[in-house]
Image (cartoon, rainbow, N blue to C red; front, top):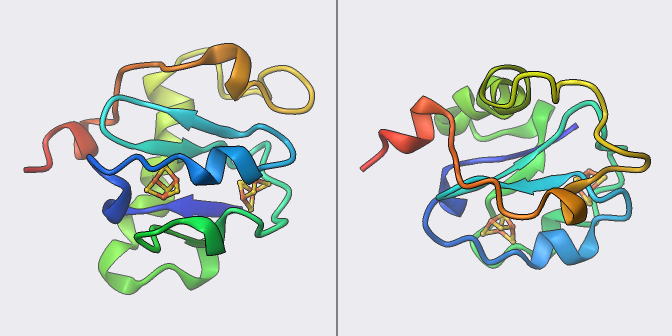
Length: 109
Ligand code: F3S
Ligand code: F3S
């Protein structure tokens, strides 16, 4: 799947959300997260992000490697019960703004 890393924090441009064909990019509080169980690896989101926050998990900048696990954690731990696909396909437009982040993102200054 694709992953959103640190540059999204407090920017939240959301052009990526418009591009995603399966509606799998979810809005936390300070950042957005891609559901790894829903992303179909289409890559449409990557070029539209103005701060280049998005990349495929295998190509994440080493500086941002922790965000691969952190994106997964958002769905597995921050949103208990939402680790399974939400709706089909995707469900971010139904979910809307969730308003919480992973501890790693919330604590980032
Ligand atoms: Fe964030 Fe870039 Fe999307 S700033 S909301 S990943 S377009
Ligand atoms: Fe959507 Fe980007 Fe994945 S557009 S399907 S989150 S590669």
